[in-house]
Length: 211
Length: 256
Image 1 (cartoon, helix red, strand yellow):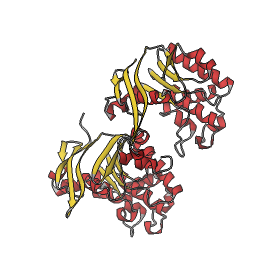
Image 2 (tube, chains in turn yellow, orange; image 1 turned 60 degrees about the vertical axis):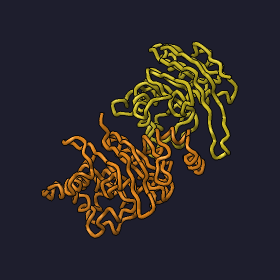
Image 3 (cartoon, each protein chain N blue to C red; image 1 turned 120 degrees about the horizontal axis):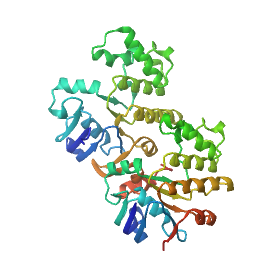
Image 4 (cartoon, each protein chain N blue to C red; image 1 turned 30 degrees about the vertical axis):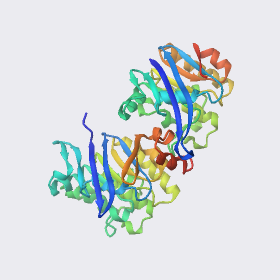
């Protein structure tokens, strides 16, 4: 599902005298359906950068990253939009809230998904009284669970997880681990950053070291 | 697939000054495209060129019509272009006073485009006007008031209703939120976001507000001195800007 070859990413800061920040160099990575690869490395090793490159949020400087048959290093905007709609989902630690849109509608993209959205929010212990409220005022953990629900309501074949359990309590961490395992059983290919060792050991089928 | 709108090699100058230089882009059905850049970068000139309101000095603008395939906007007759502009297209001006008739009622402002298409049944026109006022979150009781007594935010919402009543497929917007208070801006942005999704509306939105662009647009063009210096998915351009000017633009605002 994912085949990365010689991927490099360098940031060039033009307004800082053109200073170059090489973050990733010559990364190779393969992820098959049903695999969950945990990215590991010190802070600044480029774990989040790699996820963002795979999602097409960051430009790839050189090399290739084929995700679901599309090389994101060369894809057009239209191909990326289709890829994000049908193939890849990305769960960050932070929910980018949209003013005035209630939590339930953020999770359910379409009206016919409302039942599933309700079930998922219940499972993630988001209190019912919050469902009709826009999440701007939610706690970090509540926002994160809305974000997770939004992604797992329709598990895509490729899931990118940037610390999905960062601000969750033990019960919710277990719930999220359960969702990840279900997606793996259904054949998803997952790449994630898990600082929590318990979570990593429970869900990762392999660890990929970044230097 | 054919793009809904295609600009190819557009140039436009005013005297010695080139406002738009060699600009090409495509817009797909249902896609919202933001055009960003500082004042004087040529954004509004470009918008007017592609909206059929300002003939470019060189280049071509092609629109995928409903029944006749792709047509060169500037090779149509004036009458055809005007019909397109008031049926399949909308144009939302920065200041609502430019896009509204200030001395007739809100209902008449919305109904006018329907009447231009031949609608004559008063009750039906009024019914449609009421429906559209509701969709832009205006109180139906204000239908007989003139926009002169409305707030800026209400006028802008009325202008949007007036444009959408004919169910256009493409709307051009010139800084639709910039004349408004911040709280009013958020409401209007959210309304625009919801309407473009529900109606599968394609839009070209000129704005200098990067946060507004992030909320509304799938894709973004960055203009400087009349040229496109960078384009891509909105989050890509904002999170990993490549061109020195885009980097400056993104780093100059608080959390776009």
